[in-house]
Length: 487
Image (cartoon, rainbow, N blue to C red; front, side, top):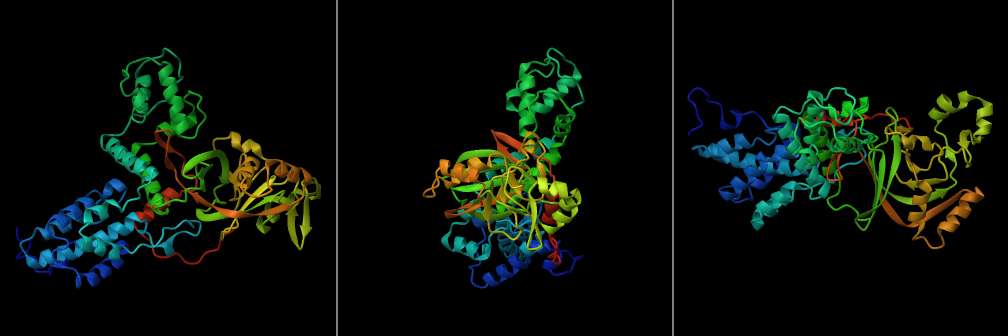
């Protein structure tokens, strides 16, 4: 079919909706530059088919429908017009470059990231990489290599498709308030069982009209654990709120997490520390294996813990706390002299400092790593926060539930630093700085959806960063004006 029309005499390139400017400006420029040195059939025939299949499948990775204009390009390539075919070939190359950049987390210009989003994707020369794949005849393999290959990404991507399918099918039923009493039955119980079965395969074969039994209560507990709630087996308000988040909302959380996983290195350091900010949890991996998991406490809204990547290079035993000026003026000094003395606050060089001690805000251990936000991991005397399911309570630094134990783990490879010596140093009360001979990579990331125990776990978007990210993905903004961060 000839796409030319006697009514529409605009040139072929003007007859279609223009490309997504933010994502494709660089890609189109690179594609045109490469066009002069590429053979005309590089992206024709089987290569074009493979390329279009990948672009059409892009929404399954969380990219907006027709973000890469696969249908438009397919129409151009199928045209009887030579001009349209040439235009289609140019746009296909540009779309592939844009697709590859997007799969490497480069949809949003890094200069446009909010200041607290210090975890940014690495640069990636998609144009050169595509040219090499075409030259080597390995386009299909190249396309398969563009999405991250990590287990977390693959699990989330598969789940994203599943949640979209649930959404397209009308979603799941709303669960009403009810006491969960063994033997109770009726439409409310049926709605609960049906709702849980969408995410819990152990309920897939249960009869909807069955009464409340131990299996249903256990399913409620599994769901609560996946939401970071206490597994009481009762339908309290927090549990109902999480159960009644629509499938569309869960898919959106997964979509945001997929994008943030695309920001990470393709090959994570096998030994590393990871803190998931909204989950308020820390994981420590050694040689790729999870060896330590503990609860954490992250920054409260307004004092957000930033996303970042660095490396722990030092540990301080019995650390003092150099109180930030804003915290000193607004929170500490107004409490009066008696409070300051009781909590060990003194003035040094015009700055408020809390000396080491049992009441010290940093507890017994501080983990240092270079970053522009002046944040760190540390111990705390306020252990009560770890009994709560909502642990966004700090001023931005990350508190660890078992910080002393973790310090002993990291110091185990440092000559002379046995657990006994750590205990003796802590008992002395003397501030001791230990420079680590081997730095341990650390990253603080914001994932409100993540794989856990064979299913997807969810956490509230405490900072609103998911909503902000999804807006930016669909409408990449210009770079923000320089701002001031309050720490």
